[in-house]
Image 1 (tube, rainbow, N blue to C red):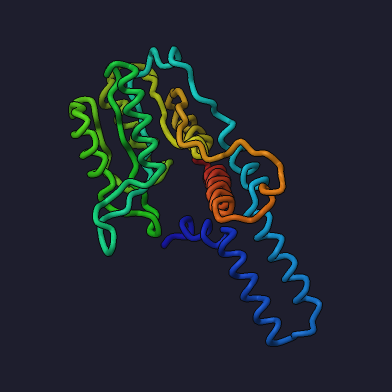
Image 2: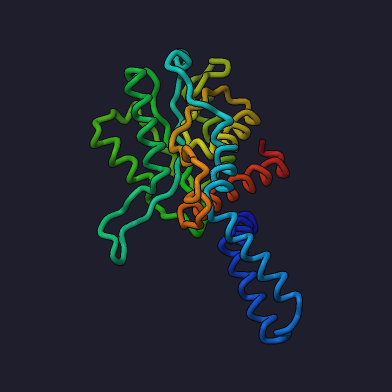
Amino acid sequence: MTLRNLIPVLLSPAFLVALGLAAIAALLMLRPKSKLVKGVSISVFLLYYFFSTWPLANLLLSALEGKYPAASPGDFAQTRLIVVLAGNATMRGGLRARSELNEASWKRLWRGIELYDELKGKAPVFFVGESDDPLRRAPGGASLVWQAASRWQISPRHFWIDHTPGNTYTSALVVQGVLAEKFPGEKNPKIALVTSAWHMPRAAGVFKKAGIEFIAEPCDWRSVSLQLNAWAWLPNFDALSTSTLALREWLGIAAYKIRDHS
């Protein structure tokens, strides 16, 4: 596991709460009457509470998803290629009877196919970037996508797949090479960039840095229409999961900025 993969795990709300609880347990054994126990306990509770309620979770995520609204149909008139950024997959094994794309992969693929149909097949679909995260990667996700395209009877001439494990940055480099190969002589062929709305800011920054002209086509929105009633302030798993997703993405954006990838 690389440091790049490890940092989001170490800074996730779940890990920080677990670390805080471990510190409280240690302090209770070593210094049960210490004021530090009280301070750490309150800090851990507040960390858990705010990350597991919808107001903060929605704020973190909507700040990402609001940056790139969905494009209008006319914006795709000059599109030469529909680029769908891959998510993850879970392969068959144990109690899992069959391999499956995860939610993000499926929604991105589906939006790419919808756009292909809306453009009447004038722009091919390019599914790129199997995950290289050792905690998330399941080799074979691309094969599942290929099976789906075959069942939808999309011609191989119009559906391309890159099997190289990588991330958003390496995906942009792959797309850069494919554009040069498939559209020689064209200056800045325009693509439709399809990815989850919460991932679009990071992806857009990388593709801009690579000099690729694109129309952002977000999908897979996770933020909710929030009513600030009493229920919104009750901790729940979905809010904690959403906070973790948003925090991971904000960390990814910061890391790409530091490494000059965007």
